[in-house]
Image (cartoon, rainbow, N blue to C red; front, side):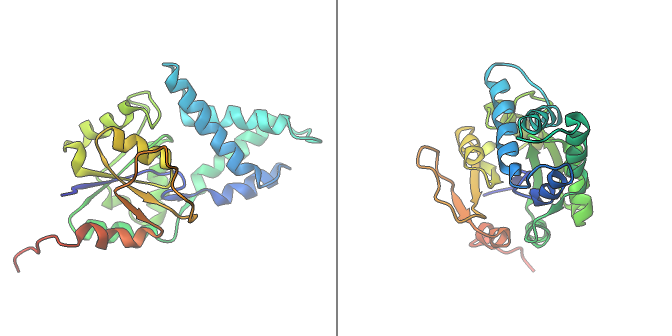
Length: 229
């Protein structure tokens, strides 16, 4: 029986779309966002694969400066522009389905927590603004194991901190690579398929697939014995 619901943060809980406006503020196209974010993940994971580490903010800012400098016709101050875009992480909102889902999970006796390649401090601000911070048992990031997900050490850190067996933890993520990493580390996993995309066949399959986070509480509590009344 699942005891802990462990959420990825960027794109799973947090909606990054407002960063498009920040990019446009500095004269870059908003559609650069997916390329920048994917490059940040690539470089952070690459460092982990090489046995090194840098935190999300450093990797993201360095990558963005490179992208801006390489834009045709762009002649701004890359360092200042990147700082402006990066500050937008402090203003992100959650996706609309998050608050109700988290409240329902907590009410059902499940223990919400987070594990992000980003910053636990940024996660705290995100959940505070959504009014659900107090429902989360732990806000974890990869700075302690110094290994980005999907490295096994990241998931082991969460298991150790939460104090439950891996198969009692359900990771929820929009990223198939995160689902795969969690499964290989012995956790259960749910894929939040917000974009209605096919799941990559080379990855370990999720135990559950949902398109709206509000479907998760009923899915996890179906068939559970009721508390005596």
